Image 1 (cartoon, one colour):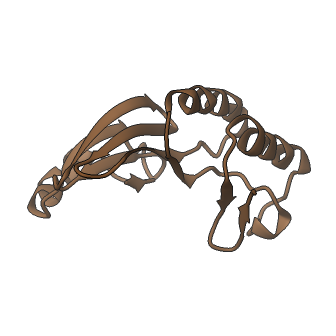
Image 2: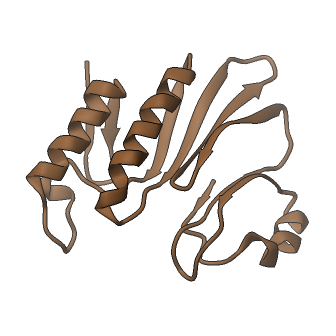
Length: 153
């Protein structure tokens, strides 16, 4: 999974092929130095199927031989907060499709607690909405980043 790629995939396709990777999904191409979600695979013992794709997230089902199936969503949410409501509503729909283990990873461009803010202002209103979506409607068991991790029992 590559997020915020800063370049169109077609400019690097030869490089990735030389590394042994092929594209499973190029959901959003970079627009200048913004956006970009790529899902690549090197083959191996798994099959990856695209379940849902939107401008801010791609969800795939990974089927691994001799193991269990699980869902994976790569997120690169827009930094424009007015676009988040549509994104969260779409992600809630995706959650209903993901029957089984689900990993949601990437950059949501929002935080839940003030200590996660680096430069910029913390908004209690937006954090409350983000918390409600993640813990209430998405029913995530844990959430956080490198500076903080929240686990729900």
